[in-house]
Image 1 (cartoon, rainbow, N blue to C red):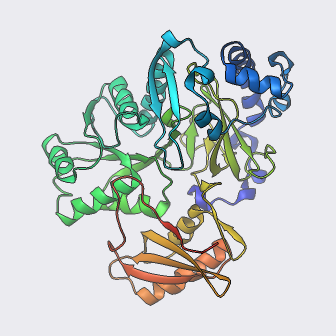
Image 2: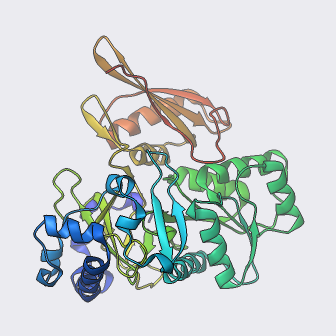
Image 3: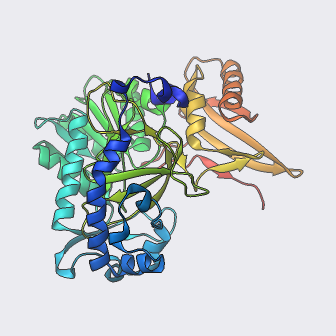
Length: 435
């Protein structure tokens, strides 16, 4: 059963042997949290000033409840201060910097020590192993290099496993396909949007039987089950959703396994909390909210209670794969990217969930928000699968949007392949309302 199909109340009926004991798990992380607080207080001017302003001394944090009262760290703080003020390691120990893409504002610069670089590679290698990558695989890496974490992060993980890295970087689709055929690429890595674009190009050129792909690892954006199914069916491969963000390490702090039940995250490196984005209150296991991450071992720029703005929940179930690593649900959206229409707060992941239940609907859509005579209007343009009846798809999609989100929307079904594709992240929400 897929994550989107699980009712939120399911945890109450789980027998103990199928339930993750988060109380014990989090308690086992407390000593690492306490050590982290002492380290950043001694070495980071930013965190020393932040804790002093809150009237908190590291030695006063004796329980997880105490820890939950430490102020959050937000991206705006990382943008407004220089790394000399933020870092918790000596300048001579900083061996690399990365920066966020800057899609939501000024890029955030993050310093890494040698141990941070090693930890990043370890986590990435762990992700790739979860996806089934072996040392005999040939891995084509299409995300960007340079300041962005993705390209070099994936390459480090691939090389740690001992597989062959093909460091293509983004774009140049002709060259991507040429190298995929020439080198017999077995693993494709990229954004989900570019994965879909390449999959459609391969199908269009009748190359499916000539390629050697068996695995796709996609991330850097939230993507839904419909897109997974489309990429998987076009390329005849299994696909995996990798999670991460530059401020923490980069992609590689979590991934789903072959059961696709949820995203396993690495609790030996990270402490996860789910909070109410409005009140900041820590929510119980299984409740949906904003993911907050604390880095347990990071040295260059450790983060304490960092608000990711990503909306998900801790999954209470033990994964059928048998892994001891806990899971979060696939990302529903970002708390700062949700939009309100007709008085209802909507996350893009909810639209994905509605499309997943709509026969004949493909994965790609656009949401156009307008205001007419003082009233909100929402139109959703949905690609229909080849051979599907547009009227039936429109009716079913309208019904499912109402059921999942609680609003009525105008649905326009367009031919498959007619909406824009992207080599990076696809823009799907267009708010044309005049405030």
